[in-house]
Picture (spheres, rainbow, N blue to C red):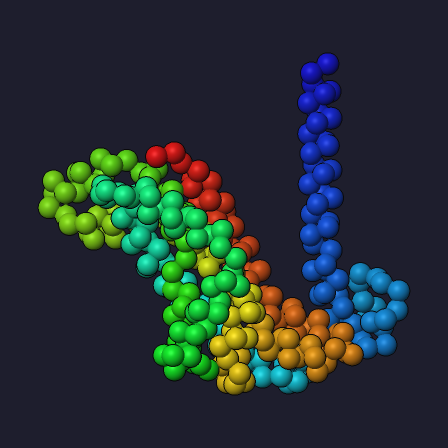
Length: 275
């Protein structure tokens, strides 16, 4: 009796996962197929596979807006934010995980508590600082205020806690200082956590809309999301061009997530460690 019951449970899980997968994938499939339809076919009853693939929609969408500049701005912003998170979050996480000093746990709890603060409460003070520093319409405004992230500190700290302290002690006996221990021993072992932070940081930066909207007004510094919003307001009556532009904007994030998903899961799983 246990074998049929176990088989039924496994079948139920697979059917549930299949249904959830369809719900998640269906909007992306509709977006891609709509981007390959002609204008007169877009408003017809929905069908998945176009009768004729209109690949010309993509070059026409690229010609309709300066997507190359939007891509460059998003790449520069995302690269700067990811680099800042990997460096600053790692240093903070190392101090909170491997060093012993008074108030260490209180500082960590205080950092975690800041994650409960609504974003709109911190946006205006950060915007005021950008104006005071004269960074409006610049890469500095897009990158500098977001160079550190509490989520990255939590993830990297959790992974460092899972590594034995004997590694540090053996390295100190061999004459290594703290920076050598961190960058030569601990970080190579913490690749899953670093990949997780990098992926989430990239997705956050690439998809961010509010902050770039506040600190830029010049088309020269518009990111892909702002460019897509402007594209939407101009080409909204043409869904096939709009979906082509959306696919272009979504490709980097989807590709990076699919390529690094295993390391991402490993890094997040290793974060659940008790001190």
